[in-house]
Length: 380
Image (tube, rainbow, N blue to C red):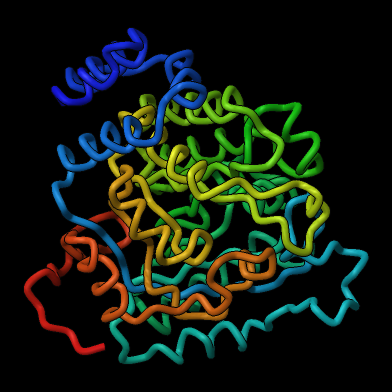
């Protein structure tokens, strides 16, 4: 930290921010914007890493999970999405809709395998409502009672609850009673109304996304939070987004992790928008670690950002790299994500973490530590 203070001595604002981090004090929104506009990468990385190591040392978390995507047919028309097939395109050859039996067979395929979580998200299909998913979860828990079900973005849940004419808390309680354990963080995008109007105007608002997650926390279901960056937003929109998340976390303490998601411009209606550089990726993750003082975990979703970048991000505030993602996830691969076949074995994940001198820790869905792999000899 002394080096950081010396490094920033010529910029009083950066020095003040470094002093605040050293004293474990919260930085302001204006200071967050200042970091985007004036913080050099080495400064941001050192500051973020100091927070990461103070909280977690060298520990880097992952879990053993798989994804199921019930459908990519969707009533919404998000401009950045290469995955969904808008409802009018339901006859498109790229559209799919899994049957209930397809989903149960996918669960049964992992029988006897050391998997702790199933992640279920997809398009917002008008035929798949609250009652449908309640029954689906109940049957999944019959097949695999020990499996943690992390399911449905706030966008999907908002549609379910509105269609069923129930409040957010009522809808979430129904799903919790069926066996759902937590919410992923998708659908947050950018909360700013003007930006959201341009990229995803027909789905739930930023306020509704926040209300859904507050409701989840109120009924005892933890969740994650995301932010889509690197498109038409500016630093002020990113900081505003994180500030709203920070305020809700102050209120509920229900978020497990924050996950920045990089905009990919392949095969969507925003393909004309140039993708940001890896340097910008590092800045976003580092500033997120500095700004979100009440979030314990910053996660890099490796299928989106790539394995090599994920390794590097472990020095920029990141302490979690998601899971084995043993499936055929298409939400990001269809948009041109780094990983077109997002599957990593436990051995590969452990090696990725060890290769940058970090300590691989398997966790469950709510960050209970299950196994320390740091001393194990694994064969790839």
